[in-house]
Each structure stands twice: as structure tokens, then as C-alpha cells.
Length: 116
Length: 193
Image 1 (tube, rainbow over the protein chains, first blue to last red):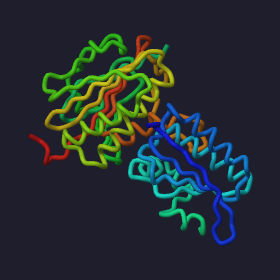
Image 2 (tube, rainbow over the protein chains, first blue to last red):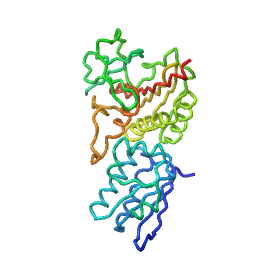
Image 3 (spheres, rainbow over the protein chains, first blue to last red):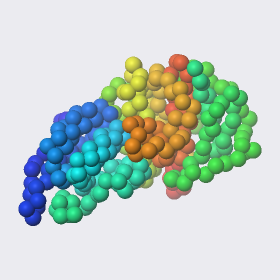
């Protein structure tokens, strides 16, 4: 089993298109480059809203956090919004500790993020 | 090259110990609230160990229960699983086990980033705490590494800062031969034997 699997789907909520990225597994320094490239590819499609579902992510280290912060800056620059959904306790901890959760909005569900 | 020599033997009072020529102070941390303690409580100084990369300079204390030893290269998920299992078995709460796993993973990630050879992890616990000791052949030249909070705009540098935030105590020794980092987590009183 791969340490990290990422799936991307284009969705719509109340007529608004958004990109949903689901990250499942464990994200650390050994797979950050892959994660970053994949997320950058999605950002380059210029979605208005990019939602990352973290409910299947058991662990995230600081290098993966940096990848998310980079995506957030890029989305900001191009006038889009990044939202995170349902971080598990270990992931919520690093988001809270670094105050990244004050910079990037975190929602309890994809539906909430898509309408928020 | 700056040398960091800040290893101390375990003392119950967790004092800050100033060693000659050391520009780095140890800070006792209680959960997420840092509390400075006075240097007046410092015990007699232990000998300054030689060669931070040499495990023999930092023996496991005789009081250690169930010491375990692992070598890792890039298999950080396996190391995280081992630390989580061990921490729960030793009596750490789930939330604190998550903290320790994060800290160990961040230190081991530095091995993956900077060291050209495998790292080693030793874990043990006693009546008061669980300790993870990580050694590799990388060198940390900044004596204040992990002591300053990096900006979220920074390109890196969160790793060791996180380690210092989540652990009750962090000891670090680094020189040209390598780096040894000891992470201490207090066990809850109920698990004291």
C-alpha cells in the first residue's frame, strides 16, 4: 500500500464549480515533492475554490504543511480560495500549533466548505 | 564550526544547565506552557560527552524499562508506528502520544533531508517519563535551532520548533561527528510505578 494516495475530482455546489482533492495516508518529507507537484498542477487550472479533504490523512509533518501553505499563497494570489476539511487529531494538532488553521479555513465537511 | 554541547543527565528538577562555552540553554516545558527554571537548581555537571554522532557517548540510563532500538533510512511511517505503540504501552495519553510521534517524525525527517547515512532511534521509559533518542550523522550548526517560532511565510524551519513545542524537554548535542537529540515526555502520575 502506498503511504499516500491523492485523488482529484471536479465538483459543483449550487452552480459553483470547485476542485476536491482527497489525501489519504501519511504525508511527510518522503512524499512531499509528489504532493506539492500534484497540488500545484490543480492550482494551475485556476479553480475558484480548491477543497482538500484531510479526513483520510492520518499524519502530516512540517514539510507537507509547507506544501499546503504554498498552495494557499498561490490560490490567494490568483484570487481563489483554499479550504481544508476534517483533519484527524494528529493533523489538526500541527495546523493548530503552527496557527496555519487561522490562515487557511478549516471545515467539518466538504459540503460546508463548498458552500462556505 | 559552532559546537553545541548541552547534554545533561536526568535530574528530577529539570533545571537549566549552563555548560562552559555553550550558547544554548535547555528549557523545561510543561505541556504547551514553557516554564523557565533557575540555573540555581543545577546539579553537579556531568562530563561533556565526546562525539555527538557516537551512540556510545550517550548510554541508555540503567533505570530504563524495556529499551528498544531501531535504525531507519526513509521509512518514517514505520518509525511513527513504533513510537505510537510504545508510547501508549508506556502509559502516555493518545494526545501526548500524537505529540511524541510528531516530534520524532520531525527529527527523523531531518535525517532524511540532511544526513547521508541511516539514523538510529532508541526508546525507553522509567517511572516518570518516556524518552526517544535520535542520532544521525548530520550536523546542526545553529545553536538556537528550533528555539524561535518561524513565520508561516518561511520556507522551512518549523520542524525543530514543533519538536520544542510538543515535548516536555528537548536535549540536543551536535558536532562534526553527528547529532543526538533526546525528547522527553512526562508520563501521567497514574502510570508511575
